[in-house]
Image (cartoon, rainbow, N blue to C red; front, side):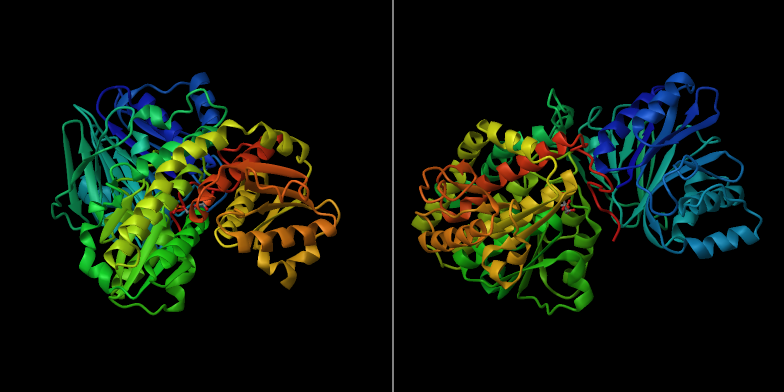
Length: 616
Ligand code: F6R
């Protein structure tokens, strides 16, 4: 959701802010703005509804004087529509301070009422402007930006990352966070703030994550982190594991196209160093050691969207390998139904961004109710891993396209590593079987590369189907979450109604949807790896084919049963059953991307969606 960048250093703040906002575009937004204390000591702001390009065009035709201190924002509208007036920054009453905000200030109506009765006038419909006016009032009392900011954040409820600058204190940017991300970038004679490291990775890879209810003040030569009452806080520095080029499009038509191609690396990097002599090594799990794992009685996986589908794959594999019961629950349903938790329950959260509010709240609920909490996350310094006992980082690299692709593969790889580790700790699989499964995982990057090398027929298929109004996806066992993921990708990218079903459910209702010409993707299990299930899916294909469906099958290369029944076959290499999804999902990702492209849609930033959903 909203992207935030702050800078203090040399007189190039406009370039730094706009560069940061460009890198944060992937988060999803509908307006953009900056505020700069210019070289004449004036506070100048510029903000426009629409894409960053609109703001850039505006700045080109009517430039601002540059300066050494500034803040920048991309807004994803919550309170008030995406208009110039509602865009951030917002100003204090005397126009001397500017403030930007990510999140929702829940008590903004009471605060606004208080300010209105004090004679304050509002120019926007936002909750943010309330914080700006409050800060202005506090500044009038304290004449110190840090103190005024501290007094202000103490009065706010809800979720917020706030940054502010004041004309009378150039060379200072203050920031605070509660339930919303903020990271510091440490430079040489300059410092940065960002919603995530992408905001400043072009300039520095030294970063510090700010904790819950903490405040930061950056100056060119210093960084101070305190709690909301002003007590100093020890903040730990980390090095960003990727460089700026990793988050560049680099000649690809879209970030999504690039990131699908990075799938093999995402898996290879996630397992690298974690399989030694055929056995899984997860030193990252230190916080939850073997003794704790031996004692757990159940696992609950919490996640949203694509991450939850990786969770279903994790459930099937972990249960099969370790015999520990696993449930998968959408994180936003979890805490509101009072789940049964105790110290023998292991909650595993899965999140690419590590900032998804629904997942984070589920993690908090689990910790508060005595469960052990492990997170699988792709983003260093993010909030969810910081609030978990242990974390297995996926190493998919930055995922910029809003729709998740390579991160899904890395999440599945991480879950499988964990499942095999758990099976060893609990003695449910022999070392030999664990080694065989590890070998399957190690082979995935090369097999997936082969899948990605022959995608012309998928592009062609998508081109033919640009006018399609509804697509169904069927799978059984591990093919079921693949079907769900294929449907989600198509919905979010191509805005086509799509449904994923467990194929066995067909006769219990969904088969009524089948009419002549209805396209149905079927994920067919291997006739070698899952002969029983294969037969069942072939029967399902016959049922829909008999009713006129167009069958688009993803099947193992060499499966002789499928071609006579299917209109199109997209072949994947042979793999053991649990590992097939890592190959079968790629054609569906590509199909959704190509179909969206054929419809002329923006595949990287689909409408209404944000990369990182930081509000509940
Ligand atoms: C779909 C997609 C979303 C995310 C979900 C969770 O393509 O990207 O469904 O998977 O919003 O996001 P994270 O993994 O960041 O918690």
